[in-house]
Amino acid sequence: MTINIGLVGTGTVGGGCIDILQKHHDAFERHLGIDVQLARVCSLSPDEAEAHGVGHLFTSDYREIVNDPNIDIVIELIGGTTIAKGVVLEALQAGKNVVTANKALMATFGEEVMDAVKAVGTELAFGASVGGGIPIIGPLKHSLIANEIESVMGIVNGTTNYMLTRMAEDGMSYDEALAEAQAKGFAEANPSADVDGFDAAAKIAILASIAFNSRVTIDDVYTKGISSITTTDLAAADEMGYVVKLMAIAHRLDNGIDVRVHPTMIPKGHQMANVNGVFNAIYVVGDFVGETMFFGEGAGAGAAASAVMGDVLEVARHIDMGYKPLPACSCTDDLKILPIEDLSMKYYIRFSVSDKLGVLATMADTFARHNVSVFSMVQRGAVVDGVVDVIYVTHTARESDIREAVDEIKSMNDILHADPSIIRVEE
Image (tube, rainbow, N blue to C red):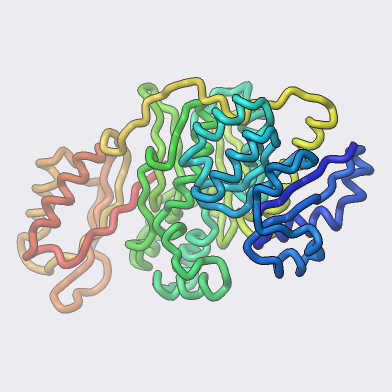
């Protein structure tokens, strides 16, 4: 059987898909008995198509792909939530099966896309939207479906993980680590999506939706990036037996689900603590399977293209065998998204304060009045121009109480000399 593919987007990942298909076409046909053919490619640049030897298949109008009756599967790889949304919805409405790696689209308009899938009865696959080459979407939807998933936690952004690794191991400042990440191509010229946590937020929204069978959008995810983290914080965490990672976290609790992205201190003994550089890892806990972890390269042409083409071949196999399309994500439960203010955990807080009598007593009194119990307090480093860093680690405290205490201390202009650094602790 011949399955015809229309590819929209011939950039890094799209080019990788073309390369995979050209290299392994005969093996796919031999193993699966399916002749997967690239029938049309679309992008803004015919030069990209020419560079991969498919210039003769080029069109600048994606509608020539979605409206072609001979095309069975449309691959959307342009990203974003504007034109890409139109490509995906129009392809589905035209009765096409769709494969996408678009995390922003699925995390923002996932419900609308899923409704379109149900309306036409075709198949949608989005395994490459989280974790690049790490197979996580499939296991959550199929292999682990016998479990009630209790937690999903991940290091799902290679850029920030690379930066934090360089800062912790080599003493680089935030700015130095960012500049190096940009020079190596790990970070964009505008790195906000990565360093401010939005990329990770989109990914955990998708993972939480599948894991908990309940709709989570990117707007539901509390998000804080790594720009306030310093080498002082990383060195202090190391001495306390922790490492700092930008963690995407989703927990099922008795009264709802907790979904968030922020810098997090995790114990050195945890499996996630040794995930360094541009690598990603996703840690899943199920009630029967227990602890599992998925590890690998989360970005790059090869890893992401591998995931995309894996989805393409699976959909092609379903078409060949006449399978009824599998549900992309039913999300039939309606679990409450818990606001972060209602959560309780331990906190690391670093203040830059005036080195004078009464400061520590004032701060201790502020914490006590807001029901925050302090586990430890240390002065770190030397006094510089009358200012010193003071680090507090709390016992388990309510987020709202922590915020009120910190806001009161921030209002003390004669005491505080910079915004405090707050890192949440996951045991």
